[in-house]
Amino acid sequence: MEKIMEYSLYIDGAAVPTATHMDIFNPASGALLGACPVAGRTELDQAVAAAGKAFESWSQTPDAARKAACHTMAGVLEKHAEELAKLLTQEQGKPLNGLGSRFELGGCQGWAHFTADLDLPVEVVQDNDEGHVELHRKPIGVVGSITPWNWPLMIAIWHVIPAIRSGNTVVIKPSPYTPLSTLRMIELIAAVLPKGVLNVVSGRDDLGQMMSEHAGIHKIVFTGSCATGEKIMASAAPTLKRLTLELGGNDAGIVLPDVDAKAIAEGLFWGAFINGGQTCAALKRLYVHEDVYDDVCQALAEFAGNIPVGDGLDENMILGPVQNEMQYNKVKGLVEDAVAHGARVLLGANPEDGKGYFYPTTLLADAHDGMRIVDEEQFGPALPIIKYSDIDDAITRANASENGLGGSIWSNDIEQAKKLAARLECGSVWINKHGMIQPNVPFGGVKGSGIGVEFGIDGLKEYTTIQAVFS
Ligand code: NAD
Image (tube, rainbow, N blue to C red; front, side, top):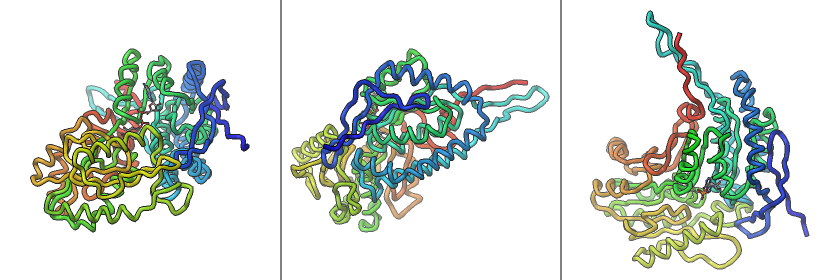
């Protein structure tokens, strides 16, 4: 029998073995993929101590050198892109092609290079007879990064690069569902940095809680569910940690009566089904005006029915399986509940028995508010489509959510769409598209979808504190 690959933690510039491991399986086939080290308090203390020590010199390292190091890390990502993409596909399930693993690795490189080039120069806020005042941006210290399983490598890069660029050191903990690709990626990119600047520990959820409580960690950047975000905030309170929380979403899209249904079908589909819907800012509830409801349903079903779903290592696949059994059962349960409450299946909904967590691309018409799949985040390949007749009512229903990550308006009248977009309670709003993010534009949620932003100068500032210098 082939020996499975054992992975290691990477602490203080060296691979660190652990006494225990947990098995990681390929969600497309159920095959054993590798053994993930399970770290506990001892290994976490070791990583935090190494990061704390490294902070003394990394925070004093000239800015140009830190910028160059971030570009070098981006170069390493490029060199190992294919290796990492294959591992990511086998671990996460997303296909190599489409908006899958190769796309994610491309994003990692693009974000790393862009963030490397951002600067936080000293700002002079006063220079007159009464005095000279400057604002200096100083790194915070040791940053703890806790990541989810949907875009594990890109989200890790979103956390790690701005932290290091601005002079912090990092201990990162990947999701227990997708740890191997992060362990491998961090081992590769950390090797170009002084030892201790970037460390990775893997384990179970309790390791995340230990990080949130740890007195040697000064900031937590977390991407994941709302429930975990609340727990992290509570655990981090006694040590007054800085927090960036990127949490769940239940994004609404609103289609106005003036659209051409066929023309918007592709954009709607990818807005909802990127990564099989396992994306924080995916379109999760679609409100369509009654005049175009049937046309939009039909155009969307035609487009969606032609997208191949299968094992992501097959170069022809565009969508893969749901990442894990818990999420698969959640999506299945929400669809069954919707059908039991009157939703009409346009496509999908009946998963076949077999290997892997394959759930068919599912479109549900005649959905309405009050159904669990409309009110809760499904985070999977099923989209409820809700009919409306009055736009003010649609806006009210879109806003009647604890979440506020993204939203979209679909119309040929851009000015009207912008006015409506401004009324949506969310951090990002798109016109005739959904979910597009860029490294130069701050991204974050309002209401229950989080605290703080990532990306661009505003995102970089979250890894610093201000020191005002009066002279
Ligand atoms: P999750 O909250 O279950 O887990 C995320 C991470 O938190 C994992 O590493 C996990 O081990 C860790 N964790 C679990 N319990 C913890 C605790 N008590 N203290 C500290 N850490 C703990 O989320 P998930 O299921 O991996 O990801 C899916 C969720 O993430 C969805 O709700 C999705 O919308 C959200 N998400 C948000 C964004 C965003 O940018 N806003 C991006 C991607 C995903």
